[in-house]
Image (cartoon, rainbow, N blue to C red; front, side):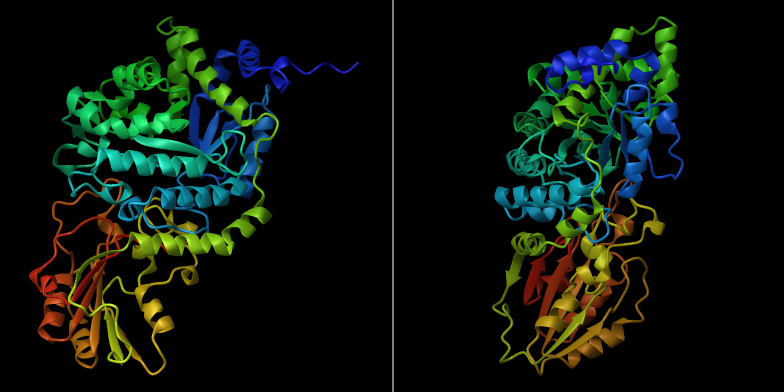
Length: 542
């Protein structure tokens, strides 16, 4: 007779029964491995059998099939959890639809729009084999020098909570068993954005009262909304790294709010306890600190494996202290049904999803609702009967990468060899004029200047185009070189030759519409104040 399947393989049993049976069969090494989330960008995936990680990130498409095959060959065949950065769309999947960033979406004041964004993103991520998106960002942006301001919903705790909850509903769909959904990850828990001087990932001077008044409410809203993943921040508060803060991670999140999901560290946060924040002398010390604080998954700290095993073998850590986070993660996998259906990639279905006209329409609707008209003397909308020629100028008038912004192919978060999103999927301001201008309208284009250097040689051509046109549309803003993780800036002024360009255009006397394509609010020169119209686009996506 064939050997009967073990109880943890029986879907008719309760989740608690299955978890208890599986944990009882696991070695210490298998338990520690489950708590690892490892970077899978390299071609060598042998670590899946050597360390048996519970989850992976930065792995896409057919490569996920290979990883899942390897995991299935491990002694207990525990399925993988696959996470990826779907920040404002399926960020790193070519052909995926990229939405405006969170700050732009916040300008819509429309929770329904955020829920739709989450649903479209999930429908495009799920068939590529992704189970979890590292979104939404629920940080408060109060120092605009901080490079990640554009990833936030702004500075109001209530608005952040409501828009975050809507995005979570969109991502998670009908619940954990929904194969067209992805797990939402509320981040960065908590106070990460309030670092001193706007410097990314440093010290945040926040009292517990300040946390409870401003920074915790959006996260509590996310927990109540059913977010199944939380992610810690990089920063320290009162000298205590978020990843080592038991009060924050266990007392508040898990006990006070009753969070039953899984808490993951940000990138190498456990390693940072040793080599950056220096609150732990060894990886064994860091493992003990991270586990006792309440972390469940350790992202991209491979040495946590040896450190945790050393701590248990040396009698400094009880194996039961590892059992608890393992049980939380396994319970999530059982509730998602991954043991019966690991949710492998279906690239044929993925191609259908990213090509859906309603997905494209949702991106257009989001872009329209995210725009803010800051100033208008009556010039807008442009009257075709009066405007027969338009000069479209500026460094962001026809730059698809700056329009898509952070967390998209071509941005610094992904290697250059990964390429970029197809150019034809992004409609720039120049593309729009060339497509929509009535027949007989002349559209002239000049870049005018650069954002990343002070070369002013293109300004005379831009001025000539303006002088020969009825209206000037100047598209300025910021650049990927100056925004994002570890890219905080000391100034909010327009960079490169942009101020000189705008000053020169203003002197032509031609009616000027200024369009801002920028990740975060910037300081504008006086020549913009006198513009006929100003349109804030933030980072509007495709």
